Image (cartoon, rainbow, N blue to C red; front, side):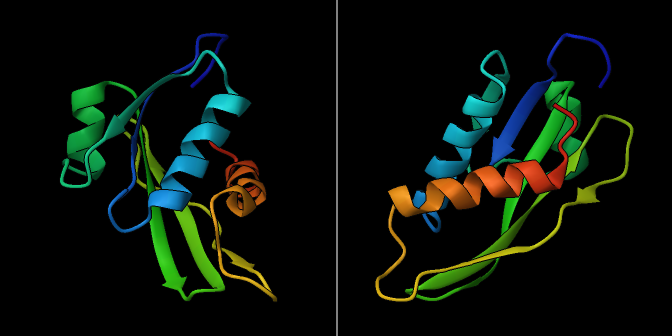
Length: 120
């Protein structure tokens, strides 16, 4: 996406399976791009090309790779209208003396968005 206008973004994250990381990623997206036209899609919403055509913007999904009580890893996958899906790097997050909790995910969510180099 070029220019100063921010794209419409449909973010799909399974909040039933990943409520903490979904919340952290939504907050990080809004923090990085305060004027972003961000729509949160249900976990059963269409994905990929179908989602992109419906939104006439960028579809963005969080894909979990692995999860335990003290660690997890995941990546962002996005697709613009006429483009092929792009897979961002997989990041891992772990806590040594505790379990993964809401506020502890903020740095992970911010780092995941930054390293993914999203077109927003």
